[in-house]
Image 1 (cartoon, helix red, strand yellow):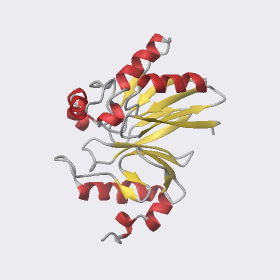
Image 2 (image 1 turned 180 degrees about the vertical axis):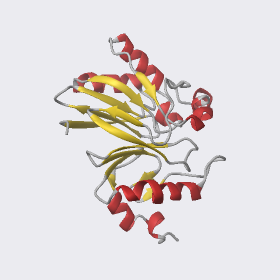
Image 3 (image 1 turned 30 degrees about the horizontal axis):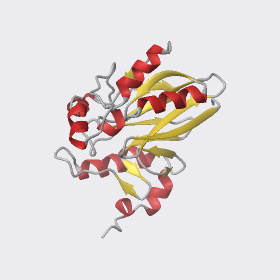
Image 4 (image 1 turned 120 degrees about the vertical axis):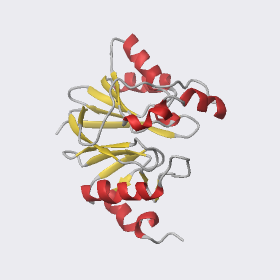
Length: 221
């Protein structure tokens, strides 16, 4: 197991959790979901003292991907050329519309994003000395993916699952049945002892959510 270190940089007015994850010994890692405020993320990477190997995206919403290309440019300027990897290509329409959505919200500094590599179910990506399995978990968006590292019992779930809640599905492309199916079939079987980092708010474990999340226990009124 690598000597894992992690930091959360909250970005955009939506307070999105941009995750920095790195191997402290090798001083190499990845950035997950740089939704905006690319300069702040770049400063946090610099302060943490690791080299970025990749930018990984869980889905195409502006608060998760709107700063990806700006961060990629900042890293390239610092001699760290990296690829933007993910999500599934079914979120391309969202990534192509980030700038327009940002204008509607009155948010500056966001841009459309074209990943260097799309992801599909069953692929694997390397980050921070770990191997992450790619799980396609639609419902919140059609192309949402989750990154799961079995060796660390760690999942980066984006906006699929939260502590005490689940991702929104009240979009024209949202699908609440698909979302709950993604959680039931793809996430919960990973094990109760798996910790997860989510896109907003504090993380949790899959076991805690299986036992107490009202969206999963059927207790929601």
